[in-house]
Amino acid sequence: MNAHLNTSSETGGANGTHDAAFHIAFGVDENYIRMMAVTMTSILENNRDIPIVFHVFTFSVSDHQRDKLHQLETKYGATIRFHIIDPEVFRDFSTFPRFSQYSAAIFTRLLIPGAL
Image 1 (cartoon, helix red, strand yellow):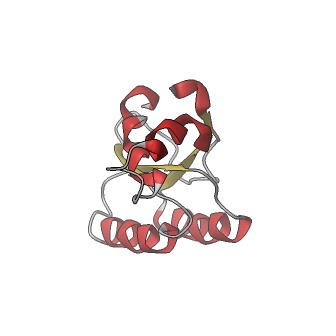
Image 2 (cartoon, rainbow, N blue to C red):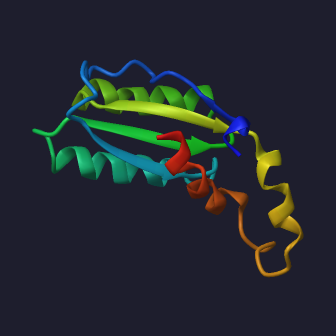
């Protein structure tokens, strides 16, 4: 399944070391990026003394969204890594009647353990 995953480098990140960092993963689509950023801000505001690396598993992210998230990195010294997923990896799930009403983004969490 991870053959359908393209991990891009962080958007810049001021956080130099990742060994002692706390890693947090999000599985989102373009409709949830803004709400994810709010969650990230809350986490960063309340944990200023902990180095944090966010992993964003998504099908796409716009340049505008990357720029906004880069502002969080700059302000809080966090790191945000994007893991761009080929949506074809979840095509089979769309044919299951029980799952077809959900966005394929809910299945991104299946890739997290193998990618981290």
